[in-house]
Image 1 (cartoon, rainbow, N blue to C red):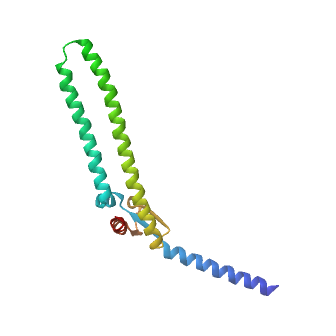
Image 2: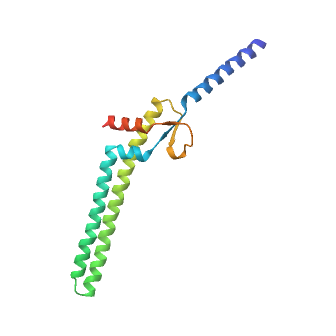
Length: 151
């Protein structure tokens, strides 16, 4: 019975040492999301599309302002304002939807690449670089390489 308890203790001790060394080998990676996003071609393209849509919305309002000034009666102006408000709301909703979709797509691609780096580098976690005071491994460049090689 003593030997069984000793064997269990040795087995447990070996298991604990193995788990401890794996935790030390893992570590924490950190990522500069802004840096990755700025270097990622898909993100750059998304920003261009979002900016173009925003400029389109601004131009729409400039055009409507000119049309409004050309109206001569208060009734026409009121009807024009109502119609323009509805149209603007629809255009603004479409812009916000596009922006949200593009941001989500970019975020998901960056997150997937970061997960691959996490596995490859045998890290325990990846956090934003702003929460790391000392230590950790910067994986930003690895994620950028992973994203660029995926295209």
